Length: 319
Image (cartoon, rainbow, N blue to C red; front, top):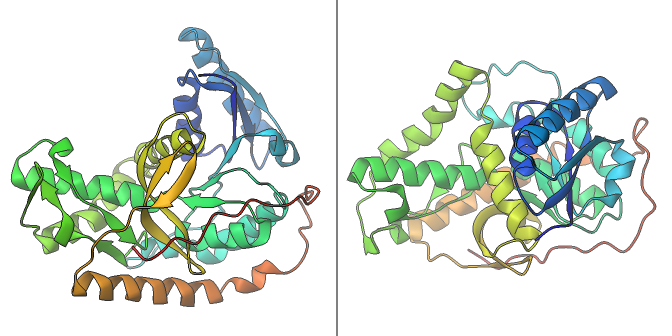
C-alpha cells in the first residue's frame, strides 16, 4: 500500500522520531518537513534522507513551508515554544501559555484543511481543541494513547503477565486528570485487581524519569502518532485512545477506526470513574477558557490557506 504523503510540523525530538518511523513505512511515499527555521527542517530532511538510503526505503523526504502542507494526506503537529517547565503538578499544562499562541498561529495556516491532524504539542487535549476550532480540521490528540500503554505495562508487571494479556484503558485528560478504567480492565480476558495507587504513581513518575534521563519523552509519543496515522489513513483498522471532540470538549476516549473512519467504542464506567471523567471534563473546559481569546485575530507570520468546506469529526457519544 503506497502513495500516502505525511507532513510534520516541528523538527524537535518527537518530530525527528516520527520522521524516522515514517521513513520505514512502505505506505509512506512522501514525507514533508516544516519547522520554525529552514535550517532545522533542512537538517532533518538530510538526516532522514541518509536513513532512507541506508535502509533502501522508497520514502522521499523534503523540506517545505507550512503553506505547502495542504498537499499532505495527514499532518503531525509537534512544535514546542521555548520555555522552562518548573511545574511539579499539572506538568503537562505548564506549557499552555507558551504553546497556545504558537498553535493558534499554525491553525490559521490550515483553515479549511479537511484531512487528519494529529496533535502532539502539550497540553494536547486543550491544544487539539484550539487547533480544530480555528482551522476546522479533524484533529486528534495522542496523549491518552501513551497513558494507556503505560497503564498496561504497569499492570502487566504487577500481575507478572505479558503486556499483550492486559486489556484496559486510560481516558479523559492526558495529565493529572487521567481516568483509569479499572472496572473494565481484564488480564487474559478475566477481571483483575488494579492497584490504583501504584498505577497512578507510575503514570506520573514514568514520564518524569524519562525526562530526567534523556531530556524529553519522544519514542512513546512518536509510536502513538504512527499508530494513529496508520489507522486514520486507512493503512490498517484498529482501536486507539485519542483526544477528540466530545460535546465541545476534547478529551481522550476509545475509538475504533475502520477504513479511516473513527467511531466511539463506549466503555462501561463505574460511579467513581464517571465522576473522575466529569472532573477531567470540567478542568479541560475551564483551562480552555483561559486561552480561548487566541481564537480571534490574524496570524502575522503564517500564510493562511484558502478556505474550503472542512470535514469535521463527529462529536463522540459518552464513553
